[in-house]
View 1 (tube, helix red, strand yellow):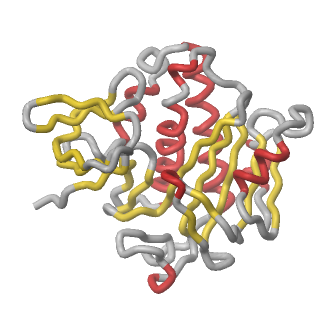
View 2 (cartoon, helix red, strand yellow):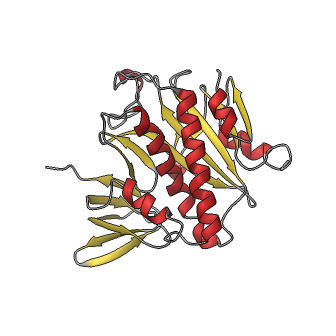
Length: 254
């Protein structure tokens, strides 16, 4: 694997043949801040024990998907702003994907699943190390229709496209760094432009949604807006609910 453009963007870039979990591997390495500085990247095309939100796990055939983990050390000073980081990652990945799929509709299902024509092509998991944040992203690149984990997924190959993996990773890491740096500099999601950037890419807004909440209940309503801390505001039966965590399903458009 050769990633000259991505290597030029990252402070440290390591592409490895196989990893159980690039997030777990980077977490273990992150204690050495000098060796693994801000914007270090660990990548593989053969992840054998991937992890996602809500403790989900999956296995992808070797060579069918990219697993990318990015180490972020230059974070916003206010802990209240950290909720924006996974949303920022969704925006960064959706824009990187969209640049290679100009004929398709690309957006983000809150909080950070990247959709192409309504089907998931990338999922993102943000994990804190205590002093840093690791953003893990999986992107379905060469996965065939038979290899897709669920019917609501897609890949570059299924769309009859060949992903330029180097360009994809470079664009993603660059945009991720730009948005996180802006948020840290301004200390405010609105003034930094992060709120507008995330809202513009969020395909959930204005849609009827079903939100599976952590307590096991399901909230049905209309996704209205993002709050100042990144929570999703959903109106259900005349009442507005602020969602900090949940699994969102878009209702089908008629």
